[in-house]
Length: 619
Image (cartoon, rainbow, N blue to C red; front, side, top):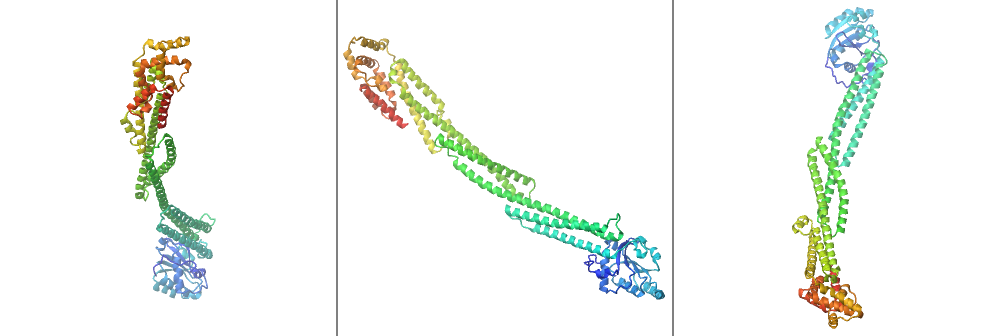
């Protein structure tokens, strides 16, 4: 006897010719010690088979029981009651020579013919002396039942098993076909897993997404095949079991085989799903990495451009308030776009943080990019705040410049609009001086009096053009202040030398005399004096000289003014012409003042208007 090949490659189709002749079969019955029973039935007219056919069919039949049963050895029933001893001897010799595994015992139901009984003694001697395994001679079924329980025997041996050999072959063929399908599915699962494992993942998002879709589709198709095979196996199992509550012993071998194959399918599916879980996670992580990297590149590029723009525009504070308003508008639009960039950057930071927390396989690549994103975000926020602070400071600076310009213009208008004829009275001079002092006091609101504070606030934001503007403004402010202080000094001289009451009432007497028609004493001198002094009122207001009907009264009033305050009037005129003084030397101003005292009223008026016009052009 040879050793059994448990990995037999034979199928029922390979031994179908011998099996269909019912040369031998296995019903699933067992001896009392649990050994499987192999039956050679009593079928007359079975053709003789070759040794090769015998070996194939024996190997095939011996692979049907479970391995632990095969290891116990087989119990063979040789039913040749209607056959001859020649057939018995042939089978026994083949069993001895080619049976693939251990034989515990052979139960021989002897031939019953007269001639066969005559040869029984001779054959018995052969059986006992020539064979290596034990042979128990049985004359009838009852003797066989003494060794094997009838429940484990077919009905032709007086047992209880209903055996349909054709049905058994069909069910065996179906179960083997199903086994082949299971093997194919298992092989496909292994191949697909190996191919997926060895696949190189692309370096871009599009390629990775396409690869994931391809792998998902491949998995779906294979699982569809697996599920279809499983459904087929379950249907086949139900067909083999039938409707009976208990599984017939003859069908049990097929049921066990089908259940084993279905269990194998389920296990293979679970194993593949476990692999797919790891593989899909790897693909998803790779896709996350590719998406993270691509978004990082976009954010990095956009942030670098925006940071360069912020850096280049940081010193631009505009040359005027109007331009600054435009810069504020541009910055607010830029800040809206920056807010979207912040949201994208924050989202990507959270994604990177989550990938790190999830122990992503590419954590060494993600960690530096995550840190760089945080740096870009912080720098972005810092520069936006810096730019906004600069614009707010620039607005403060432009507000101060605008207020200072308005202050200078208001000062020049104040000096130009003060009426000189009112300076002859104590109240008029004091009012004009009060106005100038209030104006000078208002310079405190300009916040330009502390150069150190001004430099501390604005030194960091002023470009070269703005520095020139500020320097010119400060110079202009000092010039206007100086002009006001000179006017104030002149007015203080008027208020410090008040006129006596007699002189102050003389013009009224003159007026009354003129109105009564009485000539004034010394009228000729007064008249002469009036021709030498300008009409102050006309000089200031630009009015025409007085008419001849009132020349005597005007001459008397002018003579009084000349005698009482000629020196003070000169000082006031100097202050009133301080715009022109801005362009003339001190000596020229004195000559201009003396000339104004000798110039007719219309000429004096034209001089002041000329000075005003020149300074307005400088504004």
